[in-house]
Length: 173
Image 1: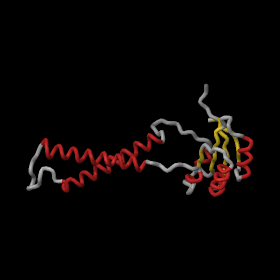
Image 2: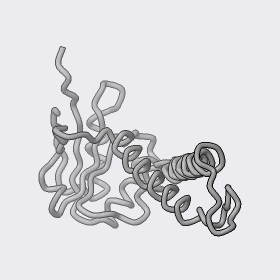
Image 3: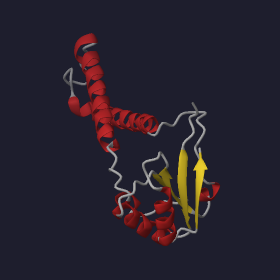
Image 4: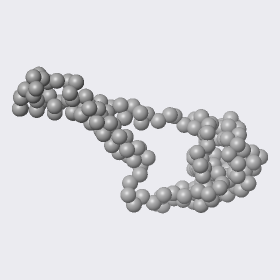
């Protein structure tokens, strides 16, 4: 069994026409698989009903972990392992450790969010990208529909042409 999938691809040359087409196609009840653009298009997330990312929550959790690790290590070293009084300060002087805790929080948060982003996007070294059409990296926009037998290809093609697609074709990837 092959791992190829069949897609119906509609190519557009204007981002405003693309946004209008997405809204009308979704209103008609067709499921858009993906949208490819050569640059970020404002409002495309809401038009495609893409849920907002929760990466900021992961960043907070990684930062809290970094803060806990920093405070834990500082507490263990200064209060239990090697308790030494420096300049009359107590064994555990929290205000003296704020810069160290802050730096650990930022470090863990940044590194953790990068790793989480790569994991969620399934990015790894050597991965071959799936490029539906080379022109989407330069100047055209593409809407794709997975043709698994449940969607009407002719109806989608006609709707794409009606909505301003400059080209409609099928592609196996």
